[in-house]
Length: 204
Length: 110
Image 1: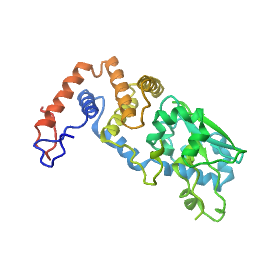
Image 2: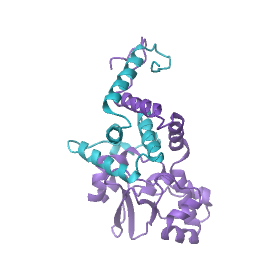
Image 3: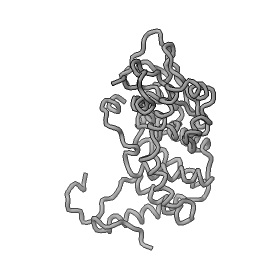
Image 4: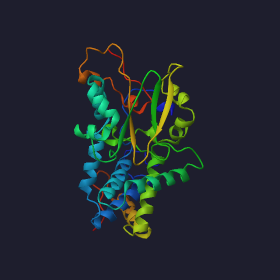
């Protein structure tokens, strides 16, 4: 790094793509096509307000309420919209249920389609070529790298998201959680457990 | 992939400020009706595929570089941001960074 000293005569130059992004923003703002305040609001939304805690609430409700679960599995989009989870990249959400016989795992082999209203922005590994290529080809091996080992009798089904359909995994409710309310249950639901690359935390 | 989930600390949503900015520009243009999201996804996946021919792309800089290139391609075609204008504006930003004293806000000259 040529600029490692603490005595910069000028402001540090951002990386090349950052300069190109600034140029894009400047031109589009001058033309009135975007508004910097809108950009700030979008970033704030995904950095601070929308994230896996939304999906966790849906899962916890499904674990607690059989009617809700049945509706969720038959047509999730209106059910999660009623909880306030709708909008960008949530137009058609499908929930797939893990059972002792079948474990579900979600990928987007084309790019990085993901149910934003329920999980926020996907983590880096979800967007990497390594995951996108290998989730379909060798799901058990990928799961093992995530620390998930499934019983032999459990099959693995991989769901490939698209710009039209986004999947959420409904993990199995951990044993020993009978007395827990929805808030306590939601705290057990990890992001990865809703992508299918993890399992919920166990009861404390 | 191994190092991404071997520790429990939550990863930041965006690793770099420009990742967040370029993400937001595409989302804002989509909402303003400049393009449909399925069209975006198709073109973005083509960019990823092209970039990924030579090596495995990571989900950070590589991913958002592809995002930026896709956006630039869209806007060049629509005429909303032509490559020559982008180049000039990029150079103006570079000059602004290099001439703004450290600690001061960086702005383009009017």
